[in-house]
Image (tube, rainbow, N blue to C red; front, side, top):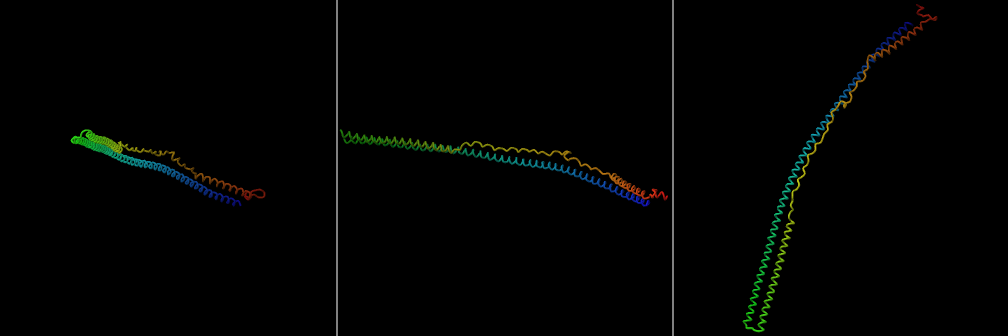
Length: 309
């Protein structure tokens, strides 16, 4: 039995040593695997940090390029708009100058028409007045001829009375009748002359009124002085906008770099596994020795081994 216990304890110790070695190897491999995972995670975090850093820099450069493109496009658009405004101003200025020239020519033509019209009115009025005056003079000449004829007729009548030898009352009556007829004719001629003069003055005044009315009508139709049209307003140059570029990236924009995790020690893990195995083996050997000691005693309390020895 003693030798069986010793053999069992030896087997237990050997098994514990084998198990402890495997446990220590497994613990060391687990520590190395954990270290590999930690390094892989750290490298991943480091690569991710570099990637984010590159992305942030690329985003800033993209923003800068976009702003520069917008600035160039804005410059081209402002240059095009300024050129278009300049062309429009020159076009409007040409129209304004052409309108001024046209208005000035129209005004000069209106002045010429007004002058010609008033001259024509003057000539027409003068011709009409001359015609009326000539008519009046002809009427006066005719009346003078009629006076002379009446006077001659009166003298002839008186001569005829005297030639017939009429004397006394009948001669006087004949002479009085002849003189009375002559007087009536003179009155009629004088009245006709006065009426012709009044008619001529009325016609002359009417001619003057017609001329004045025609002159006023021509003046009303006369074009006013056009003056000068104002120049078109020249468009101001378009203002140059400001473009603020993104600020230069600093180290704090990228954040802190990743921190490597705590590395496990394979030797410490193996030592911990061996310590646990050795403790377990010692406990098993002690239990085996204690059991062997109880089984080898006799009834008298003397060891079987000692007694058989």
